Image (cartoon, rainbow, N blue to C red; front, side):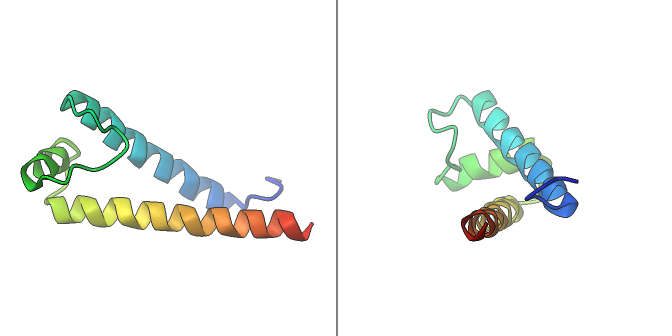
Length: 85
């Protein structure tokens, strides 16, 4: 048993971690100073998407936003459960 974390949530955390670490590593390859923020410049964002094998910058943005939103929801549920215990 995983305790507070369900198997499905654990797998989602792992997928999320891998995606966000790949983004960070690719930002390092691009020699950007902001390694935890996606580039605001469309050209740089397109380069990042290419490095990560996404078809477009929009597709990369959707993946990252979906990932971070789902993480927030999982964190909220986890802390709500802990507070009720």
